[in-house]
Image (cartoon, rainbow, N blue to C red; front, side, top):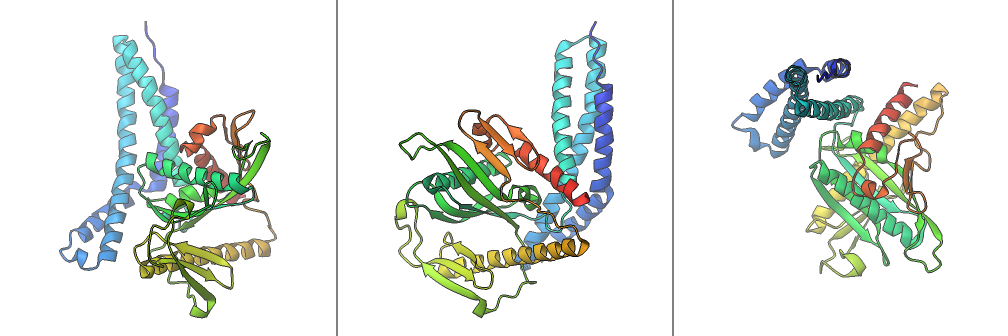
Length: 369
């Protein structure tokens, strides 16, 4: 006779789920939805487009969060009914379905639990990611393009809209740099753990000696602000260069000098934009990204000063945060968390959730130390 006992597993999930409901604060969530729904229904809402987008985005995010939390609670109830049915009927098919649903709910609750760990000042915001090739010649520029595709595939799998803002192609293979926006709630909090230096070790496809080549690429992640009004950038602190937009191989894709490169002289930060239609638009976007970078830099300097004053000086990321091995033992390993995958092909195809979850948990532990 079939005897399916998942009570301990379900009870453990219910305890975690209860903690999540408290952190999410479901009642406040419902209250926010009611208020935002009233604002969204105002006849003059779209008189102010920027505010309207902010209201509708906040409403959509809160509705999705509530639906996700409530949906998991309903599925936990249904799972218990399914287990009882499997035992009463001696139905092996129902037992198989129940085990599969337990695994799915465990994954969903783990994901939701990770999201509750993202409580930083800017974690809820969308993210701007910049990838730059480092040492390693053609292998490094190729690696930078591999990383860009990895993050674009990850966003695609999660149905997050992406806007590529700038791409600088290398003369040989790959890209020198790329900047793109991932537009989704908690995109910054999620992807910020990907910031740092990534290292690739493989037999180079660009050399003739079949020797192992090590190359590097840097990933920078900053939050997207509605308006970075806290940062004032004097005109004398920037140099603006305009140039012709180009595609792979240096072929012109634009017959006018519409691309813009802004250099912030005091810090050396450089921002390039070429994907908008006009020089004015590219300059506006570049200035906004520069303001965001300077704001984040200001916050990091303040945090570092506080740590110094407290006598707790520790490196938060280090020079290397992840290694990708594509020769001999196929392996991707995060050097901070110890999390690893033996399937680099899947990782480069966007299978990053395990690395990201481990990174978020690692970051939270570091903050609490």
